[in-house]
Image (cartoon, rainbow, N blue to C red; front, side, top):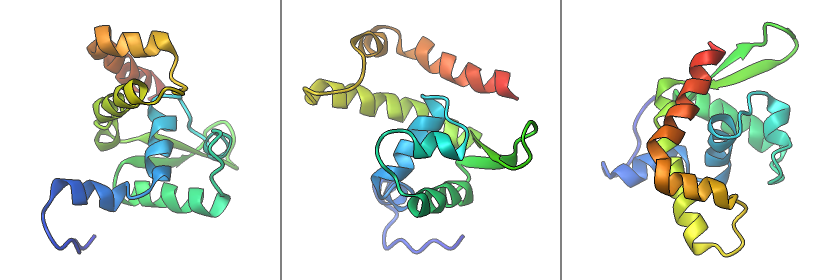
Length: 136
């Protein structure tokens, strides 16, 4: 993949991958909500269209954040899983969740989850990592 950035800014690098809300929401669904099928992302509640979803899944796969594999139990669908590179987004997502919960009076994050982020972040992150170890 050719690098077309005008600078080597790390924020610009990330924005080239996550330049819109959909990519991070898909990663949230995979990493935090346990989504693994196309229908999981389509039904997540934010109203992503099918063409945008297909495009973002392809982009995330192309950037090495997820892998798409044929479902062993149903050969007509695919399973989406994070790569190691994708898994390394978990701490950043936790920071975004905590920051948003602090400043959004209407946050949908349950209070117990926010408290867990504040008091037991490393264990919470490890639990997320562990769930993918048991899927393999």
